[in-house]
Image 1 (spheres, one colour):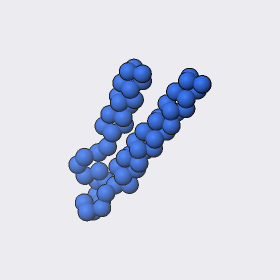
Image 2 (tube, one colour):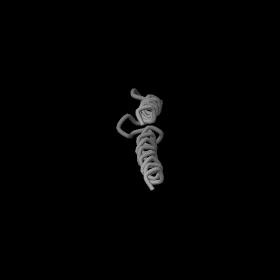
Image 3 (cartoon, helix red, strand yellow):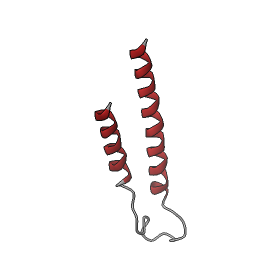
Length: 64
């Protein structure tokens, strides 16, 4: 379980590290966020939900 949690955390940190911090869309208006950066957070959230779902079903199958 600890190894799974460590890998899960590492993958989340790795995914978030690809988000651009300064001027994400060069030449674009600074007031509007770059769509890529906005979707990175959605993908991380979806990954967390999917991982929790899979771990829950795996734990449920082991206990039965």
